[in-house]
Length: 449
Image (cartoon, rainbow, N blue to C red; front, side, top):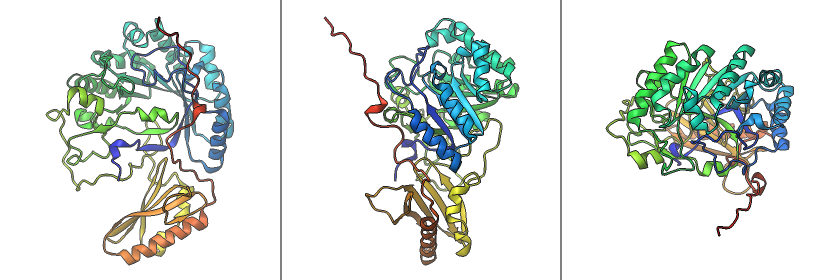
């Protein structure tokens, strides 16, 4: 069993994020891919095209998000957007951007006309002095503000993203006031992840004693102005009356595998005691290394059920600002169809469908007993109960006394999957792109004299 905290679930399996390339005209001091900039490559267009073609047929994803680096710098961006739009297979096309180039109203309109209807814009300072210092580019704040003003006039969905660091922690509420007249649908607040600065040599990690109160003030301002708020990587118990804003889910990202090797792990001393341990990641290891476990500051929510280390991440729906999540399984008809009718034939219930990047889990309950039937990507090596066209099939987590009945149920479910699997239902055995082709050659550096 692998600890939930060491993995990258929960994943919004309905949302696909495509990294187009790694170039940027800002140089944000907290950048999590600073060393990979101009070195990593984005998703090859042929690979991307196959993913879109697959989505046209299978409807895996409801949204595609394009990101970089700074994705608006890429001339081929419109090739990616045009292909997604022409496929008709995505409900929304989103751009994650610093917003600077959208200060040009003609360029902003061109993006919208191409079919982009959601813009996720970085806003890390409440004024030019702060944001320009963070981005290390004079004028970046004014450009971003003009860009968002242009987007507002174009009537698209506008969201903002703020990375929480020592450089802006004193002005989080002021950031809300800066952008309130632009009426963003959502403001997201992401605690800094020191992926390339584990020991925080940059001095960007803000202690929770400062960050949490400032963030709560900002969340109160969001509520007062009718702006939806989302918080990532800050312990839920430190958010007070705004605990519901915590959402650590991420979309299904196609990115260089090496990126995940540096991704911080999380932990909490109170995981076994807290009701929300499955969704709240706690503190990341770089923070714990610098500031400690915060055992006197964190307060676990009393559990109503016994704690068990999660084997799977939680199921989560699509990322629709202002909308409720879809019911589990309701948006995955091709997957549910693999076992349709099986539970009823055995007097059981299919109570959950957990669809993630690397596994699909069907949770069956039969009286007081239960069992999981698990699908993973088909590989020929290694054990498997059976193999279908697309999957290796397993069962896990047998609970209760009705083992003969569960055995019959598992056999029927597995047989149904093998018979109904059309082939081409994809589960990814790895996190991202691998191989030498995803890197550029680093320029040779002059030897020190």
